[in-house]
Amino acid sequence: MPPALVVSVAPGSPAARAGIGAGDEIVAVNGHELRDVIEYRVETDASHVVLDVRRGGLERSVEVAKREGVPLGLELASAVFDRVRTCDNHCPFCFIHQLPKGMRRSLYLKDDDYRLSFLYGNFTTLTRFTELDLERVVDERLGPLYVSIHATDPEVRARLLRNRRGATSLRWLAALLDAGIEVHGQVVVCPGVNDGAVLDDTLLGVLDRFPALATLGVVPLGVSAHNREAEMRAHTRAEAEAVVATVEAWQERYLSALGRRLVHASDEYYLLAGLPFPPLEAYEGCAQHENGIGMARTLEAEVHAALAGEPVAVAGVRAGFFAWVDGAPADGYRAPRAGGPAPAPAGAAAPAVVVTGELGARVLGPLLAYLPGDVSLLPVENRFFGGNIGVTGLLTGADVARALADAPAGRRYLLPDVVLSRGRFLDGVAVEDLPRPVEVVATDGAALVAALRR
Image (cartoon, rainbow, N blue to C red; front, top):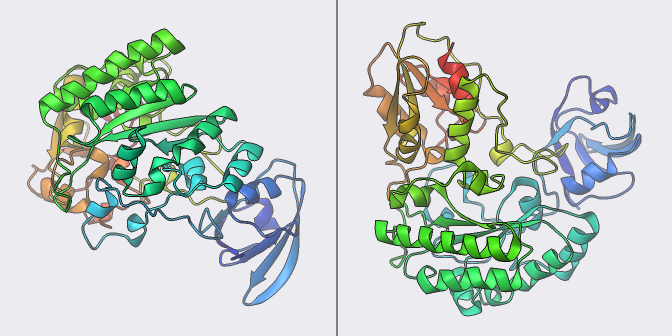
């Protein structure tokens, strides 16, 4: 089994006191070779831990004494030590296939690994899931998991995944739910393929076969300018309206049959359809907040609570392993966003400008009247991806730099941290490379209000 590479050690941690350093390789823990950080976390939970460590080609054993449950304080280079289970589907709507060249290599990796679903909330199709995987998930209670359903009709699902195993792999979803594992599902709707009657049939199939599903998110196909699939296209407004109507009709049916709405359309669908968002309570806890479902109402509630001086419960990363596992690299939504401290504000009287995507501007626009100070928006067109990509989280440094270069001086420019990972945009541009200073602000309503009050 390949060793786990240590990339950093927390100062003063048990591992630091034991002499573990960056660059060391963890060969085994308590005599066990490990497959991933999940096993690492379990093995290092005890008060006495024995690490087999390789440094400079030489191996030694290191004993670590600590309180039970206290983490070692290591960050490892990868969450999976053996090998990430890559995706062997060929979905025509896959966004990774629509990425332009020249981005970070890691962005082109397609995984279909249930462990990354558990750790980071990645969606898996279960086409590479096995009996041994099921046994481990059930024995170790590895939930929540996130499963791409797309269609419950076997032929339609196999066509969407371009994988004959797609016709049968939802049997694993049934097994997981029968074992009491929390699972959240997703349907990416492709116009003319799995909308209309097929979507209606899918939602009926969920009620019939998977009523224990925790939530089901319905999201629109994203089509970049680099798309090569002729049948993949953006929704029309009428199609978006039809999807919202179908979802809301099934919410009432689920509510009657199960006592909960279960299925939710993404915020983007309501924007595409020109319809008002449902009330916040209709999202039943916003369990798929990071999938763009309930974000708008959550932001609105956070803003109003912060303005009223009330406690704000910020939505986002969920508790448990999905939020934090000692040793796991902080990828995706768990990654640190900003590269350093924000520059000093331009001045107390300087107007504030919130940099956002085109869809984000439509969410923030109605809130401007409530925000403190002189506030405006700078909607940024996503020319890097093109197509119908308008969400703020997919903005790149090149597009933000272009927008800022044309923007007036003497303003405070607030940049939501959702566009960054470790201080860099998707295209590798660093915050300090932008043509104007920006203040990086956490992507929630309370942080926005606090920044505007500075």
